Length: 505
Image 1 (tube, rainbow, N blue to C red):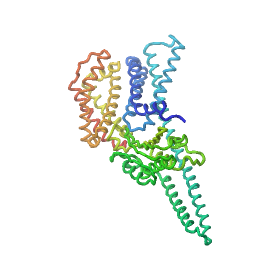
Image 2 (image 1 turned 45 degrees about the horizontal axis):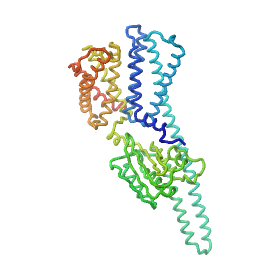
Image 3 (image 1 turned 60 degrees about the vertical axis):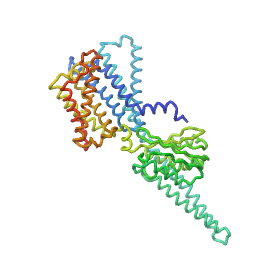
Image 4 (image 1 turned 90 degrees about the horizontal axis):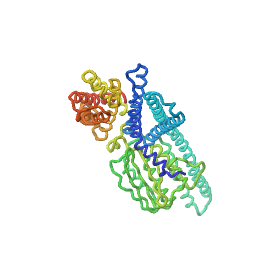
């Protein structure tokens, strides 16, 4: 069995946390240094459309990376999509290198044509890899759902056969003893009562596993305390100090998970001390159950980490670990096992959207779509102002090596969408999201964001960028038309984001 803390897991965690930024950077590099330099405006309409089309695709790849970075996507999904993008880009890079080495100078034609060919091949690999990564993530989720359903049916079948049939056998045997005047009647009555209670407990347990998840906001600290109070074990159990305000997406069965893990540590692995620790991640809460008992076997780790239930009854696994694995899967959570001398079982659960938004950036998918639509609308308004009153659009195109109105429009719309996504992410993180939910509030917050961009992005960063590409520019560059344009852009963005709410939510 592979070590979950090994290199593959480290790469997955890296891509899950920073995959969006990596994709955005890759898309920008390909676009700026391969596509933009090869854009042809003065040629025929077909050549212009082909080159500008490649520019749009490259910038769209960058926008997709920004969306992955600020969106409330699962780390597994981000890792799959970004890994697919990098693999596709790497495969195309290798193919180009091999082709160039084999063909030598015969492959090289006109500089712009060769550069555009390379750019299109690299973009095709990156975009195709992202699509493949998305499909992989979707297929994995469907496989997980199917496996979870099969495991639930297998678990219920085994639990009923093992517990109910054994209890029924005990009841039948002791009921037979009551036919006579045996001196063991009291013992038999006690055994029958225990068997009946066992059947009742088992049926209730089956109902707990069979119920569909409710997807509620469950306070984590109270759930842990309830689980610790409910377990009947002879051990020192420390509930830790989870924050009272911390909540996760689960339901009232979550306490059963912690009960079963604690009971397994004490009853099956002879732990004498159990400590529960809580940590907060970007969009998840982690509850670690650390104990001083025996290490979990590979089969037990497989049940918890992968949901790989044994094909046959396995006394070393018991039903506690299977129940915990099933329930955590229902909540879209995960379980990781670390340590051998001091076992640590970490349950990772998604936090509620309100709770997660209070701590960090995490924009829901519907809000991302609203931001893109509002950014496109605001970009059209601002671009229209520049087009009719100034020569700013060609200057924007010069940032990408082509000083033209067409390229200026494309790159301006790209900037508008990116800054719209950052606007929504910033309001979510700063707590301004509630104030920006009304037309007036959204307009005011958008106006403040537009003025900020005029001062920083347009006034400082853009002149520095222009100078870097050899275009003379005043530093700082703060014309009044820029203030008007950015203010109009911000108001349109904030208002549009609010008005698009009913259409995209």
